[in-house]
Image (cartoon, rainbow, N blue to C red; front, top):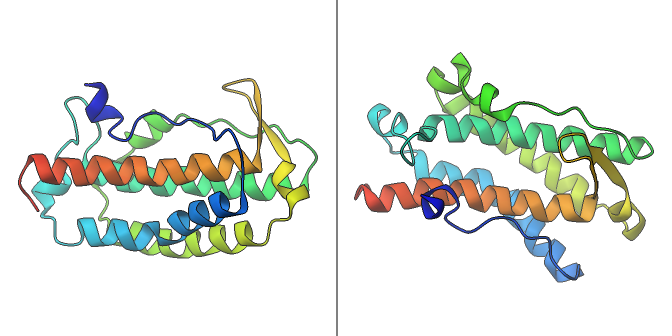
Length: 176
């Protein structure tokens, strides 16, 4: 079950942060909507309603979850750039994932939303200075401070993590 839930492994913060690491991470974030769209554009409604693992979300829910999560990422980024060590608002992603929109809404509006959102994320992330990258927010769920440098790497992983849920399901089901 662990391989299906974490097909690329769990997130591990880098030991060292370099300009090359950030460039790669931001490139992944920037291109995620196009990669996601390419993977799901031709799926049928039945395929979109297939869980990526037993007792897991459907492909549709994963797509909508990415919008939910990455929207929160953008808000956290903006808070951190405009406030001093803000405590962010925790959200129950599992409950958001079970909402009527995540379970039944068409994916096209969400794919369009992700394009604009990721453009903005990448635009702001590319402009961050070394000082900005050290800015941090407090996450109440973990009772931990996260610097923007770690958040960027976390969301690069998050993009790859959920893309792998879909690509691995497509391989297992011979949808490729």
